[in-house]
Length: 149
Image (cartoon, rainbow, N blue to C red; front, side):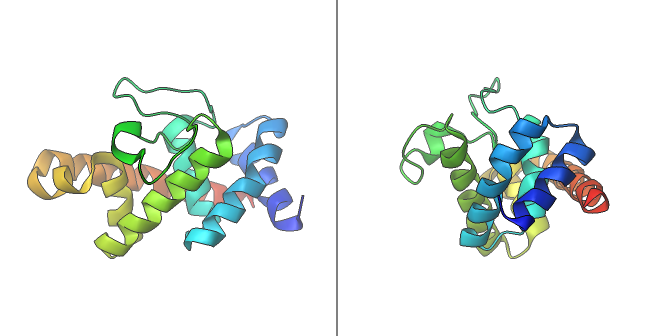
């Protein structure tokens, strides 16, 4: 494990009470994927905390799966493979977030898109409000993690 992943792992353990084995396993994946997609690793780590609390086998009532809670029905073409696999899921989640940042023009709006989808965000004030709330929650998790680093 590199010093970057070790530092991130320690922060994830401290800020989010994630078991050491889990944090040690996923931290290098978060850094590698974030670097490939141009996403800040701390933001990606904060989003994973918001989405799944670092539980890789979580399935939401809407059918979203894994650490980054990817919706297979929307992303299977762009993210082939087993979305319960931590590396595959993290790579997919960071790809989606980076894509949304490209279209939204800001990380905050990209997070809102990630939560409610661009169409819902742009057509429903209620969904836009929910997306903003989600983005604020992730940003708070990001601050908590930065403080623990």
